[in-house]
Image 1 (cartoon, rainbow, N blue to C red):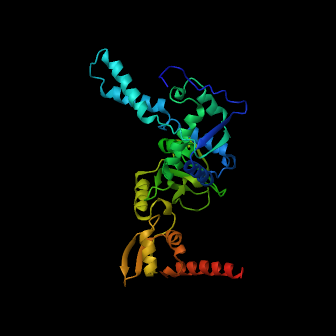
Image 2: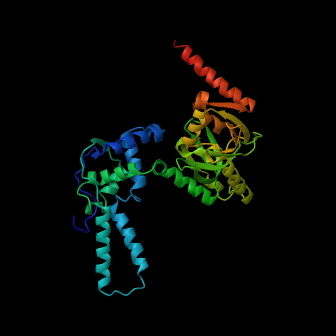
Image 3: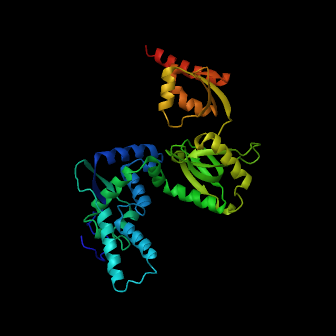
Length: 356
């Protein structure tokens, strides 16, 4: 399609604002999985709600948004050659560079294999797609072609990036609260509410999930102490900054240093809980499983007698990682953790006996 100045799609969208899209099977698999993982809020547990959130949070940074990407690349190149006098050749050169860039990135899949579905585009996204600020109709014949390219690009991204896109509004609120020194009101998916003085949004060692890290704010007159804690972003139901406290809840230099010290010992997902020395005996099969399972694996500090692994970490991390090992991992110390494992296995055995 030739480059022009026509702006906004004019697809004759029906009154119900229903839009048909055809995506490859891999993209649908990712979207359906993310709807389950991210759709904790009832209003978002449907295709339309999910796809509208992804579009509004992603279109500004998606390579599929060719006009935005091409303009950004052009501005960077223009800045790089601003001191070079090219005369009348300058504009032609820049136009040629932009056209070449568009040709490189504007390759939306025309393959119609896979499956299609309809969803309702909300008012906000319709206003953008058909408005003067959207110029993607210079590169796509139909809205559906643009949406196909954007959603298939989204589905190709790593999980942690997709989580950041879906929870973009939360992350924006958190970032602003950190900048302004405000505490945050959090509501968890479980319904529990609390306050936190935020520090950062971090990932775990393998960059699989995003975590909000900071100091909890105990209820007034509760006698509790503030604690360092982390909350997985996808486990949050609502986030709101207390703007009236701007500047009053900034973390001190010592508090930030303590958070960094604990992160270096425990990792972001396991900041709650004391560090313990934990002894676990592994069978040869258990050793093989430990070495092959990387996600959230606790790091041992030494091995005794050939198969007793010594860890310095929280008990919750040990439970999360080793419970599925069954007979191939035996907790030796501390005794309370050993008893906890035994109780869980005993209850599991009772569950199976009840069905016999």
